[in-house]
Length: 214
Ligand code: IMP
Image: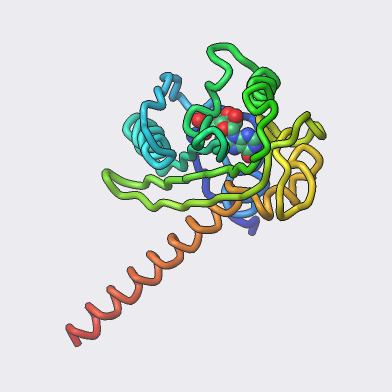
């Protein structure tokens, strides 16, 4: 008998870089399905003030339309000297139509002559699986903004982000190195722990119910 295929999990993103990372981390357990492979084609406006708000609104919008469990993340780069900017505006930092290279160039320009280069990537991931039923994972990774791009791996701000833990830029890191310390890798690990804990709680609630009825 051939083994059953892994369950399908819709990831509420069209960002190819993120999808690649989700596939690499979750690929053995789930078949990761990007939004582009579903019938969902609405533009989701990220109007939230926090990463959590945006992750939840994306997950809700997709679940509301497709009615199947969905994973949504919102993430971004927070720069200390810029009071946390670009933060939830990371994808839109360079304005409409700006490429990742444009956003990187703008950030480097805004940090010209600034000595404090401390920054962190932040991710919030929501697994939404029923009306108002969801679990949340959070992750961060610390580093600093370089003065020029270094490396071409990854996506987005990776070439200008020097990871404290890796001792190199994310633009120089291979996929496994980045996933081991990244905000997204950590948010997923946090979420998986919460899923396991909620399964354990369900089992013990069931057993408790059975025991109290014996
Ligand atoms: P959103 O979560 O799709 O709204 O977009 C997050 C934005 O933050 C991306 O478009 C990137 O600009 C940036 N970002 C998030 N995670 C990463 C990462 O791992 N590397 C580089 N840039 C990232």
